[in-house]
Length: 292
Image: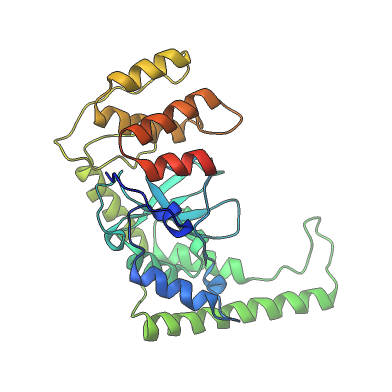
């Protein structure tokens, strides 16, 4: 938990956390004219906040499709260095909308190199062959439209050219990541992610509705879920009397229940902002106030 809060726009998103060196290098590469990470299906951008984005997640990249974004899971300050923070995929239109996908940023990039498209991390796989098949399908060019009507040859040729450029772009970025960033593909993706989630389940001490849980500073706790349909004054009473662990579960489950959407319950949202700021979670409180 952090009690101080810096003022510039950079620290609005990161609070007291330092931006990892690797992330800075990714951003610097992207900011050079003509260079991009889009051939691997992502771009570095910090302003990704959906009502489903957990408050203790610091987004760092998006895919440009369906609001899907990736972020550092901080466990409300338990993680001290974002270089070691787990990476989650937030996919607002999918079920489940939150997935644990990598142990850290380095592994995230290694997985993206293997699967070819960052957006594929929004799915679960049973084998690496399934991933290869999906990438092959992604690169295929259909010669008919969605109604089954033949497309003009010029349009088909243009699409084939774009697909070829994307494949070449992946090869280029793989070389950049290996030579300039010392990032290499991670094989056995499905096993890697499954093992990661098994370990996570053993390490969490607070279970949450999103299935990700929270690593807290105590032994495993049994905390009953809160009924968010109650009157606002009962929410205030609960937050006033709750332990820190109970509040953390409340904050995380609130996002999963869509409570923080602008069109849902602004009173509860304001109560959460006050509670976060009162108990030292100023970054999370500011983000909730300005971006949800």
